[in-house]
Image (cartoon, rainbow, N blue to C red; front, side, top):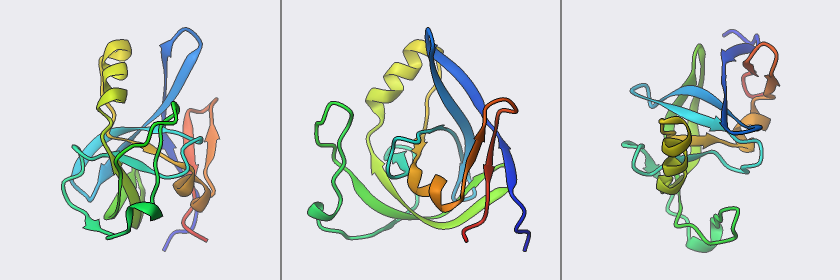
Length: 146
């Protein structure tokens, strides 16, 4: 097993003047490919419920998982387990993620840069993999869980 850090290319896009988002290509469960936003302010990794086709439901009470957007409104969400999430040569096996409807976010992306995202890569994943964002080299550096 290779325990060396892995650098994964990221794209820095400007949605509006001086408003930047970091995009990374992912492969979910070995088959679905999409773009994720690296979101250091998101506590959990989130996928659009319309994108994820295969998952294991975690059967949690609604009180155990609460999600809200920046406006403070409650968001209908489900905690699920996916079998794998890959970024380039880096793969994370069996991961708990949150499913929500990202339609409102995709409308903004469609308007500003004519693309859609499948999810938000949150701090749970970034902290677990000791992530480093290298803006100059446009890389997300990830380590296996330690």
